[in-house]
Image (cartoon, rainbow, N blue to C red; front, side):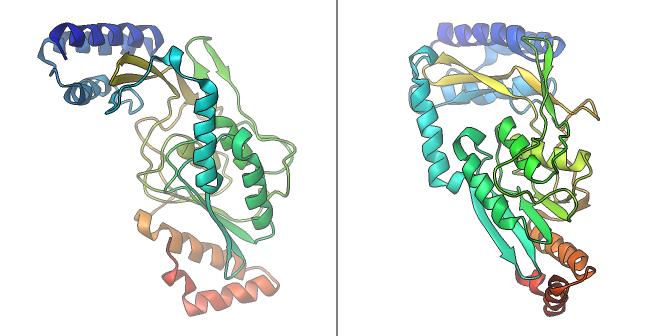
Length: 322
């Protein structure tokens, strides 16, 4: 890139940050930092993206605020076909079973739901969620594995949470939008297709350092509502919905235009991540949660309790891994 191109990218980026970034005060400081560093930025697009991203995140550590380098030239946003983008997302969901990597019953009547790589939009995979949760609804305890969940769409997060709740709606993490200066609320649904697991039975949610954005939202809502126990490692810490802006054929800015906000805490997990209730290495989260679930099932009455006691005695949880 020529110096004039680099300057143009930085100038445009500063304007976008000032106009759209969800935190206006931080936006001013970030813009000033970019202006001060502009003369020393490298001309190579990949190196420029790395250097600028470091400065974008230096003020308040927002992981969604980035300058992204693309090896292949990207078309102008106006040239992109929204239908094609939607089709690409649908194809990705189709190739990954709608983000439901696994739904099975473990010995001891414990359900396991594995969600990765994303919590895909409910409009695309709501039927998959309904099928998976209907299958697992009768189990006596449930483990939801979010260790490989890299993000998600808010309405789908609310739908999944609805299956873990009862018929009376509860308010979840909403979104404050700078453009409207309003909070878009999110609630569980009074009705869901299929069967609910419900809110009364034991629930464990597994987290790790790869758990991000929408995956963190589900974990945070479970924790703040007191619905279940989080097991594993602190999540990555991204709570700001973003928009993408093309600045150059190979460079795209992602700028948070909103922020998650929980009705009870008034805040979110940005920068801090979601801290598990039971901290263990991510690789140990599943056997740890499974044993805890077995112990709860074993303390009940009926055939499931006997099966759980047998699984504990045999140490089944020690050999379980995903």
